[in-house]
Length: 112
Image 1 (cartoon, rainbow, N blue to C red):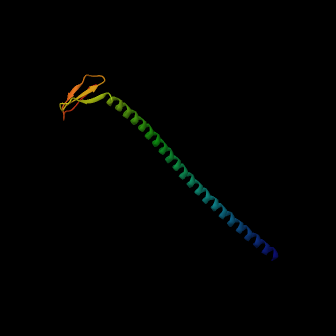
Image 2 (cartoon, rainbow, N blue to C red):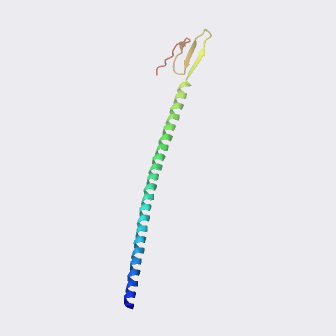
Image 3 (cartoon, one colour):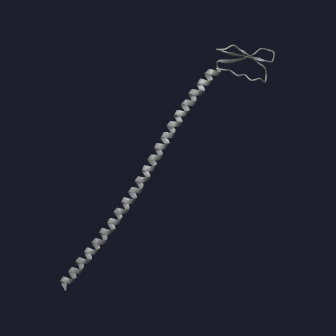
């Protein structure tokens, strides 16, 4: 009878140990799933940050190109001067070409 009680106690201890091991295993699996989920989210954030950086670089390049074109246009426009001749019309002077008379309301077209 004493041996039977000891055997029952051992069986109970083994069952408790198995239950505890199963709980630990479930906890480890849940932690692993959570870790994978966090890692996937971090990877996604990293990809979004890369895309944002690429967009910022493209914007910077476009801004620099626009500034270059604006400066080029400013230089081209600075070649022309509009001078009034006192008779209600104006004369366009260019550094490269002869002038053209301009009456109010008329259009000036420069070739070249």
